[in-house]
Image (cartoon, rainbow, N blue to C red; front, side, top):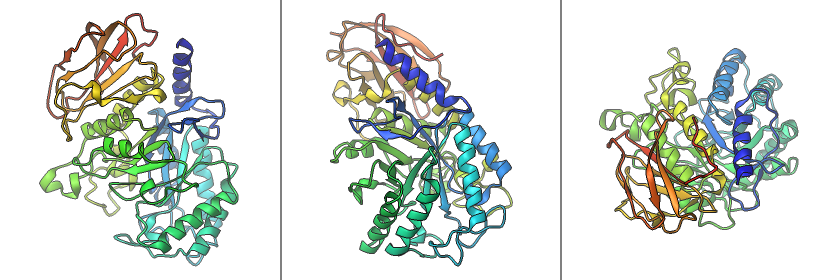
Length: 453
């Protein structure tokens, strides 16, 4: 047990240090999480930087990547053919990605900049979840487009990218780009792009980024899909735990990634005057719901960062805070507290068991989640609104337990007391209401696990 704890802490520390070599990632044998070739669990803590390649120059790219590495992020999600008129509006150096909007003709100067970003991320120990294209290039829907893909050139595009980046270790492929396939041709385009990548690159993992309130396996429960990614959507009425639980019912099993949740500083339900703006408490609820429900990773989003907003650019969906200022929004720091907490345990062994909750626990913003380790030797429970938790401890492994409250806003904790396995105690946080979320931690007396300091 002590060896497991040591390895878990070692993995966490290694990903926080600059200069970390990024080994290829693979799916664990039990299909629940990602790991390195030596079997070390990989904690996916992502950031959505969709317009990174399209809008930032190299100095700005360095600033952004260094900040995210310093805050404990491990994956940066970005797009080659970007959403915001990425085919016709050039990047920071005046280059377009394609010649004649032809996916079979890459524009070398543009991809030299992509090369630069990938190498800089690698030196900082960051992986890149690379989307070959945003979804409006095969299914315009509400986007800018134009639609340029056919199954034939999608396969060619996949092959070209794979040939260029097959030896880049810090890479994960993410197809889709905030779209559902509208028809069979759309599905064939995605399949062809995956086949094009796989014809060259059999090493890097592939997933699919769907539109809101959907998961990848809703559309592509196929062999090429290594990870099941979902987008919960930008609404306080979207409950991330439901997607993880639903994905766990899909066969074959895959690790589950929350690829686009509620964005911090984003208008709730796209209606700021009616519902206001989402904040760090939305980030925390989304993240703890996700991870304690059994996901392999969580991706943060800040509304000013994904679009790399600044005052001289048009605001998308009421963005109001520049990307530089958004780097220091509190939600990102709160996620580092989450990562430190989970990394104090073999988090990859967490198993949700909602039957341990004895109090009323309806679906909604106050919904509580509880999970414990495979050996039943630690338990974590999350209460988003500070509502009291009554738990059945009889299933736990040891007779004597100590309980702690972990504060997800500041990473501090305090001991509550000690309990017997025969007890059914009620744990009541010291504050309640929106923003008063807490994590209950139960450890055996004399447990080798230590809460982070």
